[in-house]
Amino acid sequence: MPVRSPNHERVFAVKGRPARRGRPVPPILTLASLRPVAFRGWPAEAIEFFEGLEADNSKAYWQEHRATYDAAVRAPMEALLAELAANFGPGRVFRPQRDIRFSADKSPYKTAIGAMVGEVGYVQVSARGLGLGSGMWAMAADQLERYRQAVADEVTGPELVAVVADVRRRRLDVTGRETLKVAPRGYPRDHPRVELLRHKGLIAWREWPPGAWLGRRSARERVVRFLDDTRPLTDWLTARVGPSTLAPGRPSSTTRAT
Image (cartoon, rainbow, N blue to C red; front, side):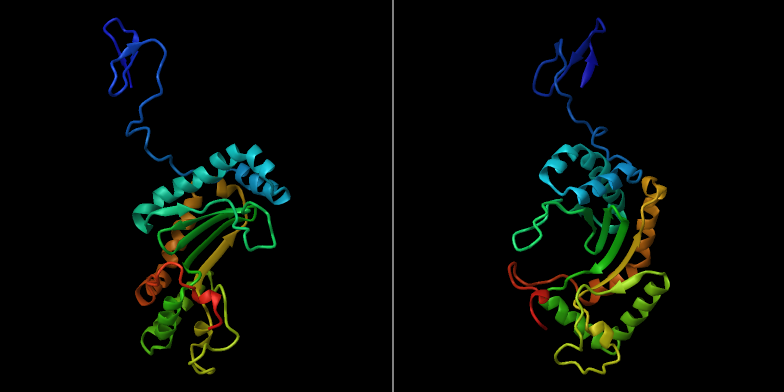
């Protein structure tokens, strides 16, 4: 870091090397320089970036606008996750590239940025605005078995019914990623909680169209309020379903007709 010599000339000290006069060397990272940048929302350039990507989903567009993605899209998401970590757990941003190995759509890039908040929260920004989710989007086979048992149970099942009703009263959607047409095998078709039994995942979800509010720090409050409002649902799923214990590589329930 810069220090001053007795004759007030700038001297640049580098750890492990003697101080020297003259041309600066790359600065040493300090605790101050590692402090996260405060979240201030997503600027209009973020929405414009995704509008352009939807019109031209190509490597050329991505490379030309990569700096906009880094500064206007990803940096605000990382700042938001850093601020939420203390209350909701560490977050992670999903990679922008699509997995096109088994898809007929060969568009190389996702037209939204998505990130996990802790283990059960989700934040997404796209040309359509802000999307928030919480819950378990896709359950592995062992999770699905525990979920169905808990839904059918005469104690934990009604608990979930009450939780879902409360979340919906807050004008949030509660749905599943994949839903069977009838009750799963082994459960009666007229089960009182058949709607919940038919889901292969369970999430709360809400979207807001873009507006000036998205570019302000107050956008954070929508995320916090959503995660707080849906915490009873995620708490139920964490306690009654929990993480999968299957070995890596085992097929999930979403790949089989169950």
